[in-house]
Length: 222
Image (cartoon, rainbow, N blue to C red; front, side, top):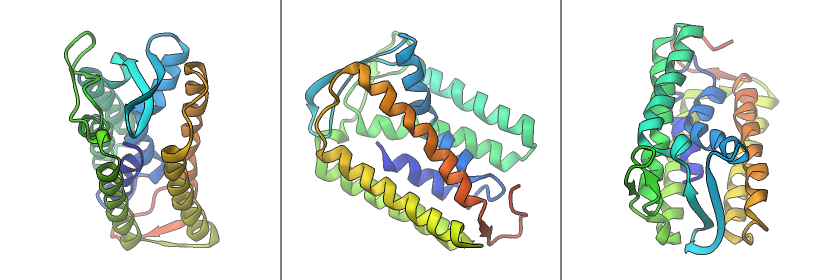
């Protein structure tokens, strides 16, 4: 799952309008933001393997800290609790936790059985990635719905709010297409460096989101 995670971040803006889209997107991506760090630390492992699924040329050998169900629940509670401690915004804290947990649920649908229920536990996955067509159809539909919800409930204050948002969506779609047609990474060692670039995307989302107004009764975020 790639753009599907962004889709739920966009959609959550309606439920937590005072929370920056940067935090919402970051929460939806949190497991994948942690993953390259744990790869670099040697705590988790990935291999480049041609064709474990038609959709991805990576074999997730071990990622029990970032992507097991048990640790995902822990990350969700920690992220929601930290957000609550800083903001005291209940809806935002709840949705931060939900979005973190949603990552595992969406990965469970798409991955082959490589997601551990707990570190050292059985591995599960429904394997939507075995069909490129179905994966793309599901993710594109999710993104369309998420963007529609976001656009209906916000409007640009200025050019950054308009074109920063448009550029973000265009970049997501271009990156998605590139992930489908690009060759595999040259080595497993190159994977964390590329994955770490994802940290820039929540910052980008937060940037243009500050330049949009919120069509609700709640005040805009700082």
